[in-house]
Length: 216
Image (cartoon, rainbow, N blue to C red; front, side, top):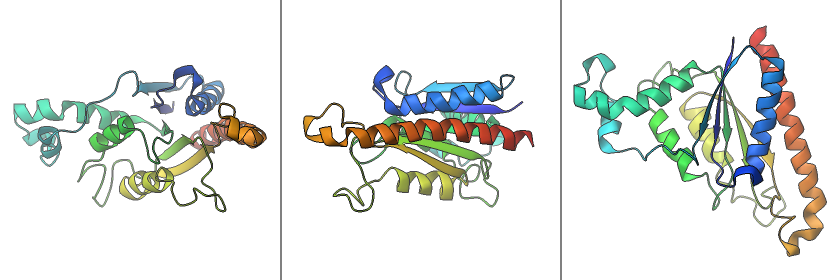
């Protein structure tokens, strides 16, 4: 039975576009794989603390050699890393805030990114695992738009998750999400609706594909 680690970060609750798409992925996953396990973290409702020095440096010591103080400092990191290692697929909601990812997601990454175990080692413990990143943004950052080149979500996460952790990263993007709420963007509502519908369909389709792939 496969395990899905589902992490949301949006602060917009039921109005969140990224949450709607991650929910579509999860629903399709559970429909195709009802006997599987889903582990859920809402980093907006229950954020992990920023990485502190004690927890960071304890990661350089093998668990069996850690002092009691180091084990206490590393406990949350150990829990988050074990969750990621136990998952067969990692699903991340990563809306764009001020051109980059939510600070709550960065905090989670800082805990999981551990030199010698998940990163910067010949055999990273998460290497090859599929990671599906659902990112949403109020405007468009595609080529030909005024904001092209200012997207620091996909580039950063591809580097951190793909190059750093060795995950197999797939991005699903919902854009122009502010169009229905901003009068000056009213002409872009049809493009927003198309982007939203495509993201929802892509999430469901990719979930089904991954279930089939893991079952093969």
